[in-house]
Image (cartoon, rainbow over all chains, first blue to last red; front, side):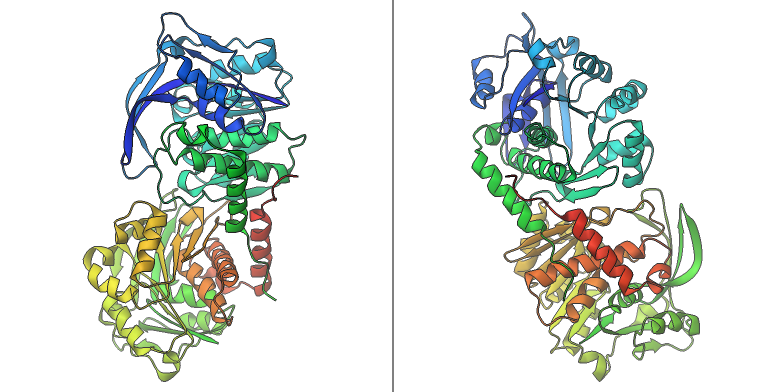
Length: 305
Length: 305
């Protein structure tokens, strides 16, 4: 089984109450790839500039991620994002965004990337996402992430793109904004009417909720005493989620619940350190141990005798 | 087993996007009593004025709540609260508060109320709560709710009161405010150092989290397509929670998780209609059915084979 992710590859400058990094590997496709790599073969598609070198490739290769479809744009700069977090770590305060080579990104997937079973369209302009979708008509499962910017500025295109995918990952506020529906259950149903069979509402420190035609499942976030850097948590979640599903033959309710748990697990490790530092040296054993902790902390005693 | 609750008995005027009520039975002690009444004998302690009559007593007696310690203040008016909700139902916008007889409330518990196994101090000025606590030295279990107003204006008294109880119910923001700790896990630990062995973080539409010395448990809120009136959800939660515990001999981790589920169940019914309308005609069968739905919607598949 294999998985292709298309999205941003970046350098991030991040300051949080617990420290700072001036230039570290980041980007949605990177966080996603590393998280998914524990479960399946991953191919990452995205553009980088001249400043992207062996150290950065080393992090991806260290997790076995296939980088053949990373497009090196000569003379260009890699996407750069600078932000800080206050003590309320739920909101990133962006200070600078330099799109660099990402601004002209027109993904052209190799035959190998096109033939992956599972496809993830990380947050990019929805026309570009649909262009990728059109190149992968045979994917068994397509997931998509987006953001408030595109809901605001490219709603029609976004809705058309969403119609072509199986799973939508958005945070609560974005789901409400997209559907103009304040109630989350109704918002999720409205999204399912657009096309996707599965909607995942990302809820930050509260965890995530899963909506399908007949089902509902919710999982709290892993309770961490210290969150160092929440950047990439949503993409790590999606990576754990879709990486796990790519390794399985079916998308049953039971497998979707496991995918939620692996997604939450990867997100929880991601935020424990800056950037890719924690996930980069994570082991499958640590992941399964935390999965078991999720089982214990959500186990509900049956009706009393 | 029996349970005594001390707190406000009120008339509420509430407008939400789904309708309005000009004067309906409300108040923390009322919502708590009705929810707890499905599990144990409940005695409610609070003041009412001349405007409180047979209809209101009828709702409480309809659920078997003992009203002997309701104090009727001749010539006074019952506490009145007026508020509206926007489409974001998480915030009540208060328009009017008339304390009436509640402003001079000095609870004097009867021998019967003092000898209950379990005591709940609904949100009142913390000196008054401590006065009640002093009257009930033999209670097996004491729970307390409070609010941002007292954290702001009577912190020292509140902390002294908290030191004397076993369970604290506060919402996320209040826990952070009380402990000046942005991380919820650390905030809960800081509260446990003040005295309580159990802390329940109420998280509105996201559900609730339970912290004990060694344990963590979180439960999502029941996914409702329509929330009519969230007033009293927190007190209904505490009522289901402590009512259930009052009916059991122990406060094990398993029983606390059941209490969380009964609390969430009662809160979910409470918000389905205005004021006490839904819980007033609820049946134990409906409660246990929803409990089972909570079991299904939180069941986590084990590690894959």
